Image (cartoon, rainbow, N blue to C red):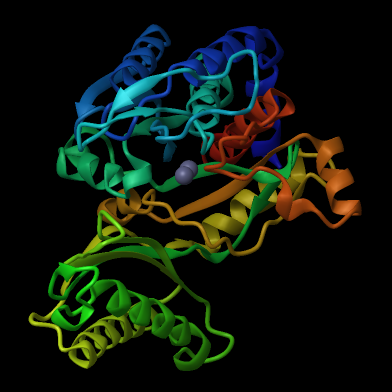
Amino acid sequence: MASTEAARTILSGQESLRHWQEELYRDFHRNPELSHQEERTSGVVAEQLDGLGYEVHTKVGGTGVVGVLANGDGPTVLLRADMDALPVREATGLDYASTAVATDDEGHQTDVMHACGHDVHVSTLLGAARLFAEGREAWAGTLIALFQPAEELGDGAKTMVDGGLAALIPTPDVALAQHVLVHPAGTVGTHEGPFLSMADSIRITLYGRGSHGSMPHLSIDPAVLASMVVVRLQGVVAREVQPGEFAVLTVGRIAVGAKSNIIDDHAVLELNIRTYSRPIRDQLLAAIERIARAESAASGSPKEPDFEVYNSYPLTDNDAEATARVTAAFEDFFPAGAVGDYGRQTASEDFSDVPTALGTPYTYWGVGGADPAVYAEAEASGTVSSLPANHSPMFAPVMQPTLTMGTAALVVAASAWLGRA
Ligand SMILES: [Zn+2]
Ligand SMILES: [Zn+2]
């Protein structure tokens, strides 16, 4: 493949940027920032892109950054990384572990950690951006390096779209993104069609009547009402969704009362649902509402419950042709065994909001971040599921070959469009 030759030429400079990239990664890991607060990170990104000769747009939808590198006639490829970290207290014990503290949207002080590996995404995209800038003779077209805020809230991609992204960049022919996952470092996994689930969070406020704990007969106890709703919700996926259809319904938070001898007057439930299709999503939402209303009525609730849907994520539905092209490029470039199909993931992403708004096909793949020896051991003993995963305070991708592989994956995939024949 001509694109493989182009990728090989572009990646010939990879070894020389290893130190620079590892230092950047350590710096991002030590300095994580919460969603929509990625000021420092986006500053470093913009400075790097500027130094590499990109046309740089900053503050796109808050802290978003886009770099455009035009290199003659040819296709336009958009590569995307997300920049935000999570309110997690790091427990990895790494010498570059985060001790950062920040103030969240509600004004609370919280520890912050790159517990989802977005520092890997930023570092590998900067690596790819540099390699394309330094290897211009091997490709033609336009490369767009997009760094988005607030993936963890599900609205960062949208804020960039709403912030005028389309007017700042040429319309891409394809959009590409990746996520570090608990698979052996040195591997990549593509998947055609739905890859990441649609997700929604739902906040339900259930109303009762408050009373003294000693006088339950004067109350309508929202703790009992909320408990009934939680139990009843367990039947939705088990008894209402057609077997074989993918659906997850989790009650992640129950909040009621302040003290053992006070019956509160309301309870709050926070739910999370994951699906691969809109009809199933709508079925879950309808069932949740039906159950909350019916249980409220059964309790004699003085008021209908309130529902709020938030943190909604779109379906990540990988374009067949783009996925086939990237997979073929990976298989041609990487050694046998390094490329596979990671299968559908239950996690979610807002990446597709950008290509969807631009009318661009996209594909999104996984890149391994687990120590290959540790992963092999876990696989042999059937304990892969106990390895620290994304969002765990123990989540710690090995720096290499994760960064090298993640960078190469971006270069190889983009070269499938940009590589000079
Ligand atoms: Zn995450
Ligand atoms: Zn993530």
